[in-house]
Image (tube, rainbow, N blue to C red; front, side, top):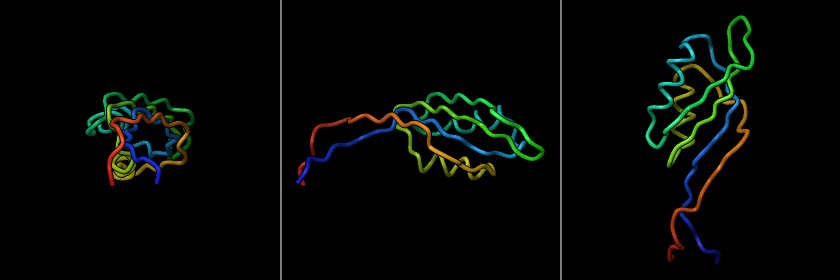
Length: 96
């Protein structure tokens, strides 16, 4: 049986479609406040009548994608794609 290792997500880049409200500053600050997140860099790629396409770069020590996606959805936005992920093994093999 293969060895099991604990892995954490350190960086994730997402393509997100969000409504104009909340504004990008509030949207980004809310995500930056999540546990395990240290930095959120948000860039608006496209704006139309009701939505904004945003490229999110999220960095941290232990990012929970589930919590991140849940927070994004609570603000009325949706993850269109996961464009990049950096993960790291954080401990030695565990016994079964």
